[in-house]
Length: 416
Length: 95
Image (cartoon, rainbow over all chains, first blue to last red):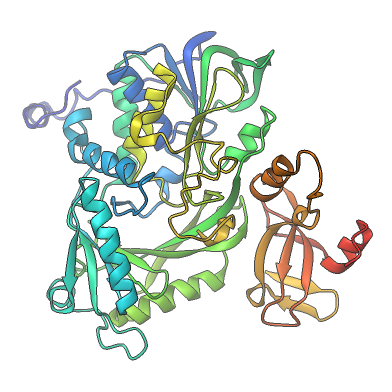
């Protein structure tokens, strides 16, 4: 069913009796061409692009819980392509271009809102680093604007410009950055994939892989064996757990990242603002709540909840950059589990086992990457060669000394 | 989280910094034939278990000792705290 204004008007006259479920709830079949493990944003996007761009529709997406129950449902919804390194920036810019055409492409309202993202700087060294980043962004075809203090003041008059310790000197802005309604991304991709014949099988946990002579021939699940020519794992947050079933150890640690929402306020923040002197970022949702977050808790965790020291640290960052946030009450907070990789960058690659593919290590940048991750993963699965913009995301890059370390922190996942 | 320091008693985990899996104590032999591969695995690959995890914590805001903490990554419950020095010596390290 195609959604349109005409359809809404017609259904309004008929008392909304003509709407049908957005996706089916099929029983798993015995065999598929491709089985995708994990019906989160990336897994559903992979299925969608496999069907739409690469013509592979005999696909199942297996999900332990309900679709979109992982990090696609618990993030801060920011999209941006303001990376520095050549292994990253073209990929994220490809993602941004897919975001820009996404709603028309999958005929679903994902509320893509390009309100801009501003990274504040507080000293000369940071300004120079941001100028370098802005140039790297422009060279990859993205947009970047260096803002003076006056320009930032016009956009965000509520910031603490004359803070004695971290005065705001200006900012790097990406006007095309913004936010997207995160659940709708999962739902839109699920609907698009389902329409093209992909089976999305919920409440179906993968409990093992059928590996014979170094070739993966399918998966064992809580609902029986399913054979497949290709198995594509896409379970960021639980990657180590799932890949250990295939006997693989990954360059990944799982960490908890918290995020917070305030009570609903009238429109105050024009886009996304990030603090340059501490780790704090904030935007405002369409419901009016301020959505913000900061650092990881910093220790391995699968608990989907963090501790109070980070709540305090994030709120201190908020108070330092925009003191008015102290007048808003914190409504809720949550924790999600991140695949923190050893260099802060993701993996989209084949594995040493034929027919087994891996996508993960998204650290806390997975949401913005959803369309490009799905597209390039589908490309890898369909053609058995990496998409040019994702060619650097290989599992063996540490062996080759080809890390993509945006923050320059080394092999210390909790610092990326 | 409260870490029960073997020398100082219960301390807030915010006084500590976190390094990672305690297997980092077991540094490979740099003279081995396959030292490059061993160091790749040592530096970059992790078991990353969901459940009991032995990990290194540094008491930065305290006595600056390294601890091996056994903690459950699903519940954050801490069941054992040892001095990393004692663990390393029990593995045959001289210092």
